Length: 275
Length: 275
View 1 (cartoon, one colour):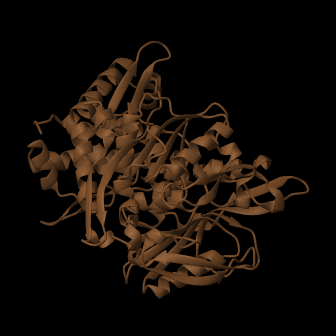
View 2 (cartoon, chains in turn red, cyan):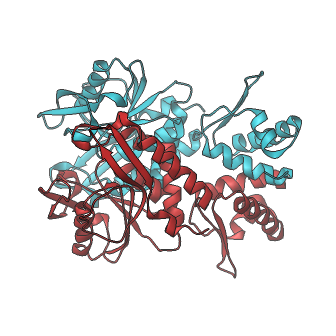
View 3 (cartoon, rainbow over the protein chains, first blue to last red):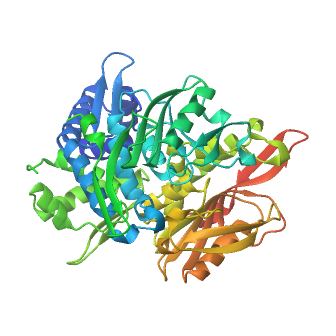
C-alpha cells in the first residue's frame, strides 16, 4: 500500500476496524500497512477512539504491551438502545399484524437486515466481555437476529432444527414440550457445530413459555457446552415460564383479538445497559 | 453535534456511510451535522471517495443537483472476489465434510457471519444498479447468505418455507419437484412479504437440479413479482438443470464417496465482475 496521509489513514482504519469487530489489531499492523511510525498510528487511533466514544459507535479498547493493540467492540449507547426499542414497540403495536389465535406476524420486522443489525449491535454491546464462543438459535425465524448478534461478536452461529436434515451429519436430538402449544416436539443440533466446552448465547425472536429455550439449553448439556444467557427480541406476557434468566427487548403486555389491540413495552434489557 | 475538525469528520462520515449502504445522503445532511460549509464537506467526501476506491471498499457515487448527494455501494474488487472464492473452494474440498449419499456438510462455512458478509458484499457488488427490491431465499440454510446480500443492498428478505407456519398469515403455496431427490414437496410464501411488482433476487446456499429455484420463481409469478436473477453459493455439477440463468461462486466438479475426494472450482461469477 502506498504511503498515506493522516486523513486517508483515518478513513482506511475506520473501515478496517468496523469490518473486524472484536479482533485485537496490533499497532504494527497499521504501521506496516501505511509505512508510518507507530507514534503517528497512536495519534490516529486516539482521534478515532475519541469520535467513536463521543458519537457512541461502540468501544475502542487499547491493550498495552508487546502483544497489545486495539480492539473494536460494537455497542449501542443507552439512549440509542431505548430509541430503537421504542421504535420496535410502536411497530409491533400495529393491529395489522394480529393473526388468528392471537399470533403476531413479525416477518416484516425480522425481514429487515438493517433493523436486525441494529438489534444485533445492541445485544453485542450487552454481551461484550462475556466470552461468548457460539451463538445458538432455532430455525427459522431466530436466524436473522442470531447472525446479526454473532456478526458483531465475531463468533459462529449454530442452528437448531425441528426436523433432521441429512446435510447436518451426526446430530443430537431431544424431545421437548413447547410451552405455548403444549405439544411434544423434537429438536436437533448438528454435533460438530458446537465444540465441547463452548460458552453459548441463545438468541431467538420470540419467547412465550420458554419451552424452546429450555430444550435448547438441554441440547447444550448433551454436547457439554455452557449456556451463558438467553437473548430474545420479544417475550409474551405469561405467568408460566420455564426459564428465569434471559434478556428481552420487548414485552408484549396485551394481545387482544376482540378489541384488535396489541400493547408492547420495553423488556428487561434496560437493567443490563452499560450507561 | 459539536463542531468537528476534518480528522474527526472523516471518521464519523466513514462510519455513517458504512452503516447506510445504498442510501442517497445529501451534502446538507453532513454540513448540518458538523456545522461545516458544504465546500468543506465536498473536500471530505473527495478524500473518502479516493481511499474507498483505491482500497476497493466499494463505490462512492455522487449525484449532482439540488436533490443530489452521495451514495455508498458496497462491492468487492475482482481480485478480492477471486481470493474469497479460492478460499471457499479449498475449504469445501476438505474431505471431512463428506456425508453419506454424497452430501456435504456446509454449516461450518454458512455458520460464519464474517465469511457470509464477505460473500454478501461480493453479490451486492454484482447486483448493484439492478434495482433489486427484495431478496428471497429458502429456509433454512439460504437465510444467512440472503441476509448478508440484502444487508448490503439495503432491501428486505422474504423467506420461503417447506412447512406452513401459522405466524405467516396468508400464504401462497405450490408443489414442486426437487431436482435432486425427485420428490414432490410443497413450498409456501407469506403473501405480504413480497408486494406485487417487486424486483426479486433469489439467493440460496446450494443448487443441484434447480427444482427449488424453479419453484421459487413460480411463487414469484403467483404474487405478480419479477425474478431478476438467482445467486447461489455452491452449484453441484449436473447435466439436468431446470434453470439456465443464475450466478454461482463455487462449482462442485466432483464429489466421490469411494475416493473420499471433493473437487471445487470457481463458478460462473467471474463473468459478472465489474473489473
